Length: 581
Image 1: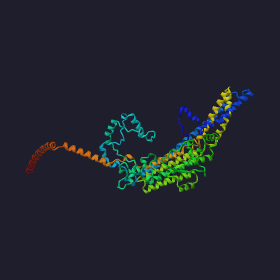
Image 2: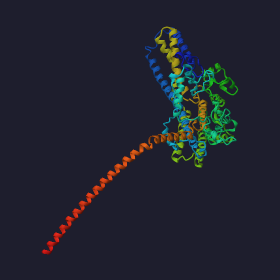
Image 3: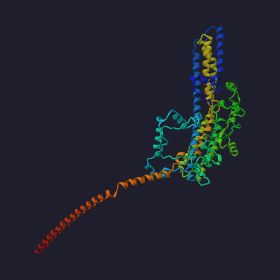
Image 4: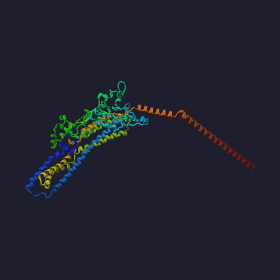
């Protein structure tokens, strides 16, 4: 892939020869100019009669051929972007599947001793009104030098243009005071720059590596990536290696991607298509093959050639042979995390055809994930969730086959042949049309040159974009994409979030202290002198209520007794009347 910057009016692009359709169309354009001069000086001089009554006839031909060429260029452009999208899609799907697998693995019981504290076990901390803000920035209180230093200290990229003396921490009084007032309300501890892996190892005193403290922190020696960002998360110094499960997972996914990309750029059986070892933290491979270092001239066929030789070979179409493409691919192997074993190469060589080789590498990755899941390496993750991993892996194969379709199926031959023929026709037809439109030789020659350059150049653009995996140097940067894919996989070795290691005991003690203070305040407010009159009033009220209820009960008893007496008298009267009768 040719990398370029947009300069003033893009004048900086005009000097590039290798990979340029402009310079490749110069030869047909010069031939057209020669034909125009011959028509104007020889034919017109010998036969002054106008053989063409009107240039419209040639104009119709030029318009028709222009539509034919633009149609091919449009579809070439679509094939290029479809291939680019397919590459990113299948790498993204495989990356998602692998990263999810790594996250699930970190939840298994083997890491219970190093997991950060969780909020579920400490719900009472919400009573402290804490926040998870990392900082409270007040730019208005920073000086110009402090703002400049902040841009360096808070950059996600390592900035090498500033020395340590130039990086000045904020010292303004207002900012310092705001931090002192704000820090206690944050649920944020010192953190662990080892991602928690240091808790798996203990020193002679039985303490974890980061618990030793001091300037000579053993964790800094065991995990040098804490102090050396260039080493990444895959550091193995002092014998401290990442989880074996994560190492194997990263290797198999990197191998699957590398085999897929290798089969896309080279499908010639029996030709060299090597894989090599990726070293984490190494510089990105150059996307533009013309920028490869001269030190690779012994191993890289493209870098060993001088610039004018490369331009001449491209100009004449001599760099697109299968032999040249094989040499270029062999000189730029695709890199795999952990390298490739002889057994893996033996199995890959047994698989016949590009599709079979990718399927074999994909099978290794899928089988490893499922076997480890059944053994318990993914923790208590349910089968429906694990099925999503397999779905992502399958989606990746779909998009790989989309890219494979573009690589294996060329632009339709009938259209390609017709376009090539009429481009040659335009080299002769355009001079006839310009001869009808112009009277000056120099003006006709210039217009002929520009018109033929436009048509032929557009046809060359279509040819360059039709297969973005083969046409060097306008191919997709597969080596660079593979290196980026590898670095993404290495992030699985980072462990847990460094800021999630806050101290629950510290905040629990603060919670208990707060509750004790509240109890003291309540006890002070509810003194004995304040309580006694309140109790006396309540007793008096209760006595009054009881006396009232006692009086109501006596009244009710008298009323019942009177009613009973009346009922007895009524019964006696009835008995007397019965006796008389």
